[in-house]
Length: 300
Image 1 (spheres, one colour):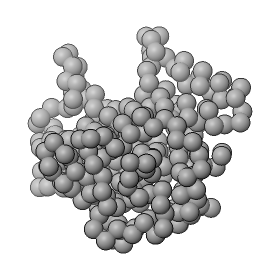
Image 2 (spheres, rainbow, N blue to C red):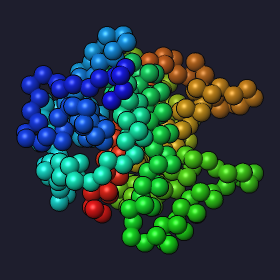
Image 3 (cartoon, rainbow, N blue to C red):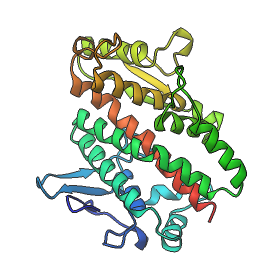
């Protein structure tokens, strides 16, 4: 962990004998990140002195707390794996890409602690920064771990060579989107994540419309079964990449001459809006991070 961000145990945390998940200078940042995402940590910014307990189990749901404050969730989360398998992975495999994972951990630490403080804009910003960190690294990790090097090279070539309409490179994040389409099954891509709107009726109505019509660009055939008008949007896993990027591009960039920027009149209140978005998007990023770790574990 960096000197400005320290992760420590939440009160009454039990490691259950899993020594690789105990905070020390030797803990691997991947293991520390799992601790963070399961809601078992307190995050302290040493420069400001702000200390935040991250209680949400983001791997389970953006709305469910880790009440037991332990790692037992890992015993039933991934089929065929237990918490001991994670322990053995971090104990036995070489610690590669330590700097990369530490940077990812720093970004997610700020994103998760800001989400717990209901600082929606800050949380979204750092979640997006974490997403950009993994956009090239995870496809390359995937390629390095597969036994079919020729096939993997072909896939990487196809993903990288994706072009925009003008013939220019589509970029890192389009490369990552292509990877996610290949990495996950159709059933996994069709799984949904809920975004529950908050605030007054007027705020909920405007922000619901903003996400549905402006960012997702849904027509009536695209509306998912669990979506409730002005209350909840249930978004397919395969559409979360575009939602994340569209929000960043339309709100934070504000490019002159574009007619599809997010206007203040449409968003009404930025903090309310990004509180709605940030927590589910942290879960989305957390799931991808976890699944790459599991992919590595199963190819050791």
